[in-house]
Structures are given as C-alpha cells and as structure tokens.
Length: 90
Image (cartoon, rainbow, N blue to C red):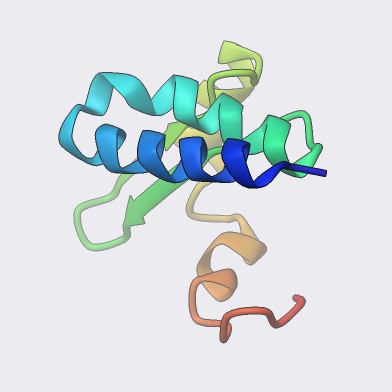
C-alpha cells in the first residue's frame, strides 16, 4: 500500500517528468513500485506514419525492440485498449 506521502511524491515526479523527458524512466519505475508490478511502460504508435515507440525501463531491451519493430501494429490490446473507457477491463 502506498502512503499518502509517497503518492504525493509520485504526483510531483509526474509533473517534473512532464517538463523533463529524461525523468520518465525513473517515474515509470516509481509507478511500477507504487502499484506492485514489475513493469510500467509508455507506448505510442502512429499507423499512418508507421512509427511505434515504447519506453519500458525494466524490460529486456531486445523485447522492447521486438515489440516496437515487429509487433506494435499487430498487438490486439494496444489499439483496442486506448479506446476503452477508463476503468473498463479488456
């Protein structure tokens, strides 16, 4: 369970990362730790431009590259998940 102080610090870290992109890997690690998971990631893909990007600081770099280069546009959850209402399970 995350304490109120830790949650406030995490929100502050999110705001700082919004201003400094170099902070995102550490913030993603903090998010993962706060929710008790091994990994947190940020991913984006533009089908029209055929560009995919992912930041997953704790993931194997080969896995990240494979997702970005080979699987991003075939990932059934990636393109359906962003259209789901907040809180809805896929």
